[in-house]
Image (cartoon, rainbow, N blue to C red; front, side):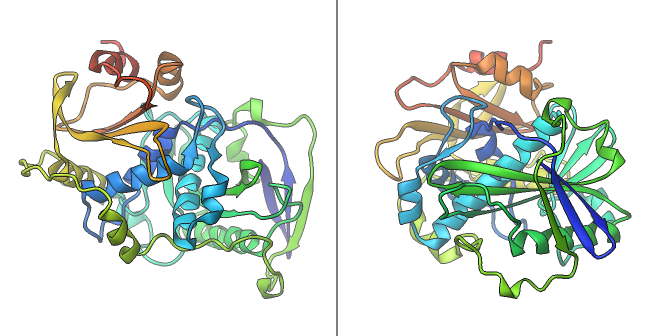
Length: 377
């Protein structure tokens, strides 16, 4: 973890913390399912395809364990697929970082994608240009989060000096913050390499973090330090790994979609909040998901289990399901992980439910899911 500050024409970034960052595979898949471009068609079938592909490349041996990747398959894949896995990992690590650093809890505080802000918040943010990925709501105010990453070919997973892309993005985010009344923000930068997955967290040096940061992440003394000019021309620096590729193009997705076809159920009357763009997106997923003969807390669901078998025999099966309406109050992140430990990895956020289980184990009982995910009455 790094904190940076601007002094004159120089930026100084100081390492202030280091540790293992646990990432739940269900949470990572869940966040990516919510990260939709609402200007495009939202369809459950394509979301399920993305889930199948993502869970085939990634692995978390237990809920909250460090994230791993099938590196051999990763480097053998096309640039578009590597970009999809890297970008998806970045969003998951960004969310895990917010939970670890700020003790952010989705059961108590909201999370929004900048592509799906509620109608009442749209006027507070510019619609075009540079903007972060996610908006976390903390007791002390809103914090924007930016997720970036790349494949690293070097033997050491973490670089010893900042890359031009990192410096440029930090400067762009600083300008975005200044144009939004000094909005709080942080950036996660994921590295995928032969030795595993790691992440650099960048926080601006600000008194607002003093009470928000979890003290367990702070070092007793400052670590390494990077210094670089504010207006450096990055064109002369060549990256030591793959540049961050764009997400998979529609043609790639269309081709992959032929692998698995899911029957589409007839739409039902919407029950989403008309002011919530995320609510409308979730309703579209519900309308296009297959029927599921099950209920959670007496609420019908739609969706289906999918094996993560894009690269061979599945280690996991994943359920991406949508409830017909908002569920009762949900358990917090830490409580949920403690309840589910050793059994399955599950995440419930609003109406969207994601469950990851070992392919060798039977699906969890719905009563067990209720006990893990919902707060006691």
